Every structure is written in C-alpha cells, then in structure tokens.
Image (tube, rainbow, N blue to C red; front, side, top):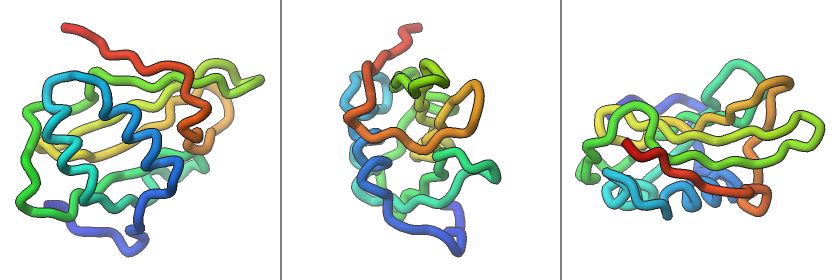
Length: 124
C-alpha cells in the first residue's frame, strides 16, 4: 500500500458521490472497487487548481481488482461555457488510485453528483 501523504483526508460529499455513480456501472473489477470505496482517503491529485484527487485504500485486506490503469467507466457533465467535461477513474495495482477531472480549458472543480449527465462504460 502507498504511504499516506500529509494532506490525506476523507472524501468530500461531491467526490464520494461521483465515485459512487462511477462504481454503479458494471465493468470488470467493479465489485472489488466497490468494496475498497468504503476504506478511502483522498489527497489533492494535481498541482493545478482542478478537482482531481488521488485515492488511498486504507484497508490492507481490501480485495484487489484485475483492472489496471484507466477504468472503462466515465462520468460526463456540462461545465457551462467550458463545455462538456468528464471524470475518469484510475486503478493501480488493483486498488482505487485517482479520480481525474478532465477539462479542455480552465481547471475545474469536482462536479457534484447532480451535475453528472451520464455514465458510460467502454466495452472492449
């Protein structure tokens, strides 16, 4: 398990809500990632002011997913004048690793779950 950074904290309501929406999707490894989600801390994931966060699973016995890298699930939302944006979920060594806010202009905060317009799962 990765050492916790000094700024590790619980997930905000928006972060936890978006993660829950992503993990409702059915994709390989989702069951294990859902089990990990109840044992999470977060820290700022980027040096820019965006809402991306690094995730840290705090239970060493948490089941590991076979999924690695970018999961096939993505949350899309409309950021007003910025246009469509998304949040993607990353896994490292079978553990939840990062919620990345993908934007194409100015850095964006993590959206609220209510802002999520759709969840899509890429199929291989």
